[in-house]
Image (tube, rainbow, N blue to C red; front, side, top):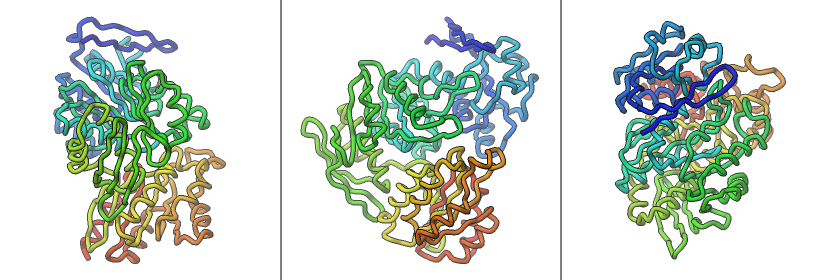
Length: 488
């Protein structure tokens, strides 16, 4: 294999071709405890490289995950962490140009890459890259694709932005032809402000949706659509784009593809279309039709129309690979899901506590609507922490007031880190609660979790379903809640 390593100078980028891959033996990752960086470190280590890294935020579970694999983590950033000089430095996207290790890397002329570049050069170059991209659903869709290929005996590699319960980790180094990667549109590194997914060069791409998000790096929807347009047009002519016909952005941008296009959907005309769907307690039954007379009645353990859409994308890929109905159903029957995506954390005293990553208004609405039939009309709590750079800005202030209708009780926590956002740009959690209350929704504002926890414990009862939505730890609210509920 031939690796193209990026040696980025202060104001320019140049490619450095390494003829002999055995020259790369030691790798240092700056910001190693980030989810993506830590996973990449484990992949490199498993692939036989000597791996170490540094971070200023070292805590479980990532710290224990890495040390258990024999990977050394140095606390804090300093030029001395690069002694002796590693063959390659991987720079995380949270690392700034003035980071002492980044500065030392440039000054010493060391080879360095971003995380996406490293993934491409070391793992995707020798595989057929399958990229799941989109504003919503890309983690679950990528997980379904990986599990499909695994059940079919194709032994895929993968890197997904969530822990795959079937593997108990978020990656695998398969020996097969395919490598599935979750394609993130967020920026790559301080020296590369383009989206991560442009480094993955997909041979097959699934495009789930295109909406405005990441308000900290994209000024408007046009900017978001511009990078997804580049992704679509990067697929080679002999490649394949599988796109969601129900999503306006994905459907429109898919027409720019140079490759073969396959559409899937639940409502609009599509090559693979759901003809019937029954959202019941604990499962979803549906019938999907496709080209050449394909028709299958299937059962999925996943809740909601949004997950049925993701599942239909998986069905489309299965048929494109000539996989039989039995393989598709076996994939669904044995799929254990992704941590923090509708993950049931416990059911003490008949109270179901769910951990979910929903944060965008579209995702919050879809998640709550999915749980209503799935849990048979039980009382549904929505416990929400606006934490992402978009969700704690005013950009979604009005939309959030319209997406909690599926819940019986709504708790909104003050967003963390508002001091780093201009006052006129901040989401007002108090105003959101007022707007929800004015619409007849039982909504409550909390400045922190200290008041939220006793409120829940005083009102929750057997049969309730608590949906805790955050992209962070939520001050360990779920663990604390389960601990108290288990004492009852």
